Length: 86
Image (cartoon, rainbow, N blue to C red; front, side):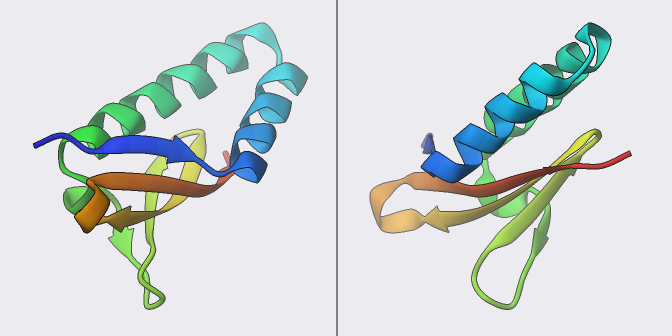
């Protein structure tokens, strides 16, 4: 079964800001990383990243890290935040 991936407004705004502020080559890397994580989250979100004590998970795909929660009853993944690194 597939999950629906939704982004919290603040996370989506941060992603847009990171992408707009990045040089063209870095934009492509950010987009590729986010796309890879989203595909994985739709398929098997419990197998992606590391579990955190507060019920969230952290997925790292250079150059981004996404914090998310899995809502099994709704078959939904909520991206809570995104950070750049590297």
